[in-house]
Amino acid sequence: MDLWTVETFQIHFNNIRRILFMASCINYYKKDHRRKECDYWDDCRYDDYSDCCDKKKFDHRKKKLDCDPCDPKDREKGKNCIAILECGRPVDRQLPDQLALTDPPVPLATVTIDTKCLCKPCVKIEYSSIITLMGLTGASDASIDLKFRLCKKCKKGQKEELQRWEYRHNNVDANDTWKESFTVTFCECLDCFDEDCCQYTIELIEVTPTIVSSEPVVSYDITNRDISAFAACKSHC
Image 1 (cartoon, helix red, strand yellow):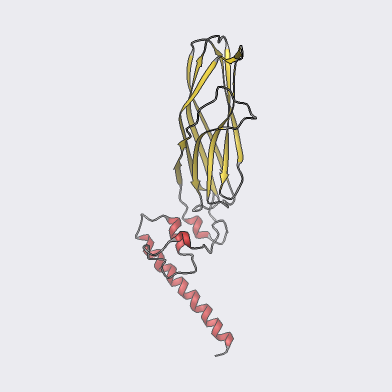
Image 2 (cartoon, one colour):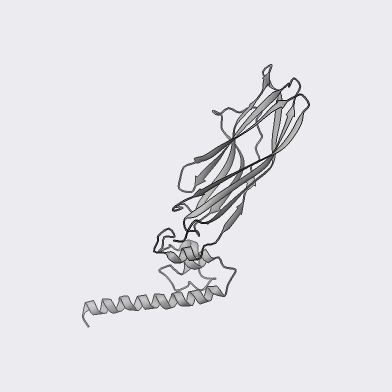
């Protein structure tokens, strides 16, 4: 056989080998419902197939994908879309009596979500808290203004501000106490999530209470801080 015939035979042989492997890998992982679908698809797309179906030997973090989950050619990724829910945590920081926009922001709660398993993901962030206000001595028809923002920081990118919110309460007198829930949501859909992990953080960026004799006459506290992230596919690949 000439060189061209040998190379053609080798190409067809490798293609058949890959098809047979994919079939065996599909049957293998259908039996193991504890394994994440994204791990299954990633494993079956590596060039080195020798240990793909051996979970004890296989370490998918040390392999390199030969597919792009945002490439229309990789349609199987979209067919096996899963939803992801991540619960965040509050950030333990002392809250300032006053805060200007030029001051460093105060992080309140943060959540990290990994969307590499999703094709064209939509991410929804939910933040909730309880704001407690108290009128101090000298308060009469006083007020307080709190401003918040949501920021995103991905593994390969810069910190990005996504949205701002404002909370304002008026008519606060001395010895008054108020408790109110403060909840915000944010959603973004992306054509492709280039970074595997992104961290979303709610920050307090401004505190403006009524001032009497150079002292604030309204105090505040932000408790029961909770943040979560939910992600799912916007559409199939």
